[in-house]
Structure formats: structure tokens, C-alpha cells
Length: 236
Ligand SMILES: Nc1ncnc2c1ncn2[C@@H]1O[C@H](COP(=O)(O)OP(=O)(O)OP(=O)(O)O)[C@@H](O)[C@H]1O
Ligand SMILES: [Mg+2]
Image (cartoon, helix red, strand yellow):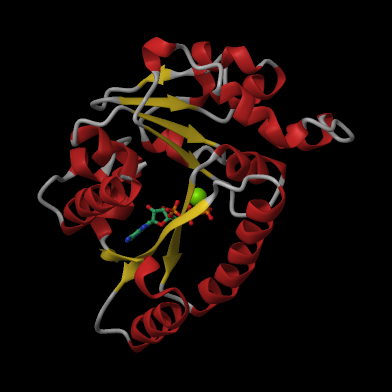
């Protein structure tokens, strides 16, 4: 959500797909989940609906595709369907020319399920945010191996855009340990930008605003603008 808004501020047209059934990116952008009648869930069933399901949020250059409250049922509904991993990809191919964005960001659920697989198959890049904590390291190696498998079997153009450290604090020994460990394996894949632990960042969603709009002079806002710049550079 914060990266999407920052890319928008930098003049890039962005579609943010909230693919997590919790819908945190949706409520964080001030969108009331109850008022939604077309969502990512409908797009899985009728790919063309992607054009109707996009919501113009009040932030520059940004459109949102909300998850819908039945997203978690998609997995069961498509069981046994050979095409089930390619549904989001075919929906994205049906975007109207008039709304083609510079970037499509897909916020994935924290699990390797059918929705995440659809996201990986639709994408050119993966961006992995990791909290500077021990468990994040365990999750990282699992995720990297899933990304490798998807690249080998289903989407050869899938690349790792980078790893982003969040909740970063140079004063904490654990932050430094996690940073060193990740850099040992992924070196230059680690973004130069780090996102600090910040109260303003945790407050922003409850006001329905990305950090760059909620408190543009905060360290968090600066971090996400720096990240947007790095992302643009790496995608070129
Ligand atoms: N740098 C930060 N400093 C302080 N709080 C943060 C920071 N980043 C995120 N938070 C807060 O932590 C919570 C979880 O953040 P976020 O939604 O980005 O995590 P996530 O990894 O996507 O979670 P999930 O796995 O549930 O999808 C949010 O309430 C957010 O406001
Ligand atoms: Mg999340």
C-alpha cells in the first residue's frame, strides 16, 4: 500500500491488487469493505470483470482491486480445474488499454496458496519484505524455494526484484544479525532502502491513508519514497 502510493506520487500509474482475504491494504486505503460489489474474487470467476472491479481511490495515480469476502473460497471452487493457476494472469491480459498502468502490485497472503501461485504466475518480479526477526529468516528460504519452483515450471520470466528490510533498527543486535545473514546469500538483491520501525507507520492505516499522505515528513514516508525510486530503477 505504501509502495503503491509512493509510486503514484512519483507519476507512475499503479494498480494495487489486494490478494489477501484479510483486506488490510483495502481498509488501509480508506475503502469500506462493506460497500464493494465487484472484487478480485469475481475476477477469478469472470476475468473480464477486472475492469469493473477497479476502485479509484483518493490517492494520486492509484487504483485498487479489493479481495472480496469470498476470496478464501476460490481454492475449493477451482479444485481440479487445470486452468486454476492462470486465472489472474488471463484477467490482467484483459485490462482495457485506457487503464493500462505502469505497475501492478499484488499484495499476497502470508501463505503459498492458490492465490499466491496465481500472483507469482502473473508477475515479472517478486519483492520480499522481511521483518528483521529470526522467524523471517525461516520464511525467507521457503519462499525463495517456491519462487524458484514457479520460475522453473510455470513462469520463466519471474525474477527476484529485491528483499526489503522492515522494522529495521541499527541499534538492535538481531537486526544486524538478520541483515548479515540475508546479505550473505542475497547480497545485491537487498534494497539499499530500509523501513524503520515507526509509530507513524503503524498509525497510518487506521486513518485510511498511506504514510506519504498521512505524514509526509516522517521517516517512514521518506523510506517508501526511496523504495519507490529504487523499484523504478530496478525495473528498468
Ligand atoms: N515499519 C513499521 N513500523 C511499525 N509498524 C509497522 C511497520 N510496518 C508495518 N507495521 C504495522 O504492522 C502491522 C502488519 O504490517 P503489514 O500488514 O505490513 O504486515 P504483513 O507482513 O503484510 O502481515 P500479514 O502477514 O498479516 O499480511 C500493521 O498493523 C502495520 O501498521
Ligand atoms: Mg500482508
